[in-house]
Length: 431
Image 1 (cartoon, rainbow, N blue to C red):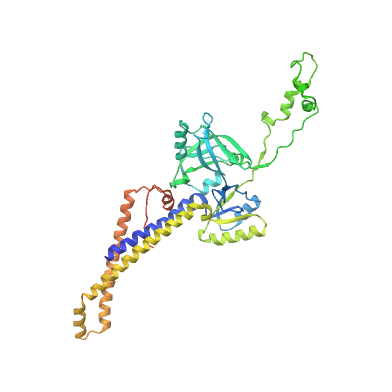
Image 2: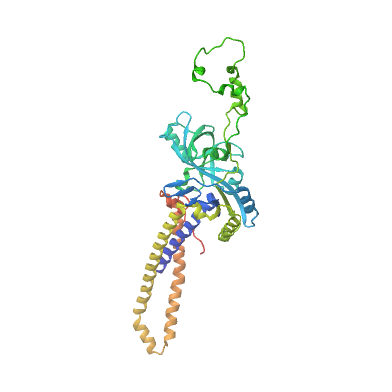
């Protein structure tokens, strides 16, 4: 009974430890880092965007981004740092851009160099990582499978996709090549909807502009076509003039050139190259995260910068809170099992005493003191506890080993996040 009770406790504690490490692997090591810096908003903000009562709201940019990054990089606690923009889009092709067939994806706009240095969270099945300054998207195998199914095609590296996104400044479409297809090293359910895209493409989709394009510098000759006059003068009469004299119509090409940017492409709003939603930080000592966040928020307040520092749980948002609830329920279940095991063990020990009432009476009649009787039972209890406690630990380790060998698949998304993968792999530690 002692061995079975200890075995149950060892297996239960193994699951609790595994879930704690799983949460860390799923988010801190792969997506959020230890600390997230973001702009301030009235609602909650996570790595997946800002939320309001009606749903998702416009995610604020980090004000004075260069100043903030310079401060964070000089902090001695900082080990690694990267910046990110988050957005949402539907994905189609030039041949089929029907909204009903498109696949939804979460877009992470990243700086490839610093991001892949900080988060080594994907394995490429084809293609190559985004390079600095390169336009493109890398898709998870789950996104590719959904696209293949919906669009009745086969998406591969090199194909061009249409990204459709609705921002607070309107609807935007961008064409990007597929640079790579990947799988996450640790499958995490809904997080497989994430795709990585070059930062400038996502800024364009989200309408992150630094300002309107400069007004075209037109000469009087160029603007002659724009002069006022009766409408009939524009559309009436012959469309062809046989006179050899120059007319405003001869200047159409010059007008088009003046209204265009170099290369013949119409002027577009200039993208804000300093626009970022988040700065993600990994610390040399993760245990110092609370102090780092407090000091950062104090500095941001003193500088009058409308930004905030938060921990990884705020960055993970609903995933972390849901997994915390599951862990609490799981812990309560283990505690109940532990209490039952303890009661059973206590009852067994009490019965072992009651059954030997006559032997105790005989020893007392022969002159044995109460302390002698107490030491007998204490020695017996310690021997049983130590020997069969070790047996219980060994049995628990065997059960955990069997579970690992069985490769039990997890289908529930929250449990996938809780244990950082789709296969249950509990571990045992000295604690």
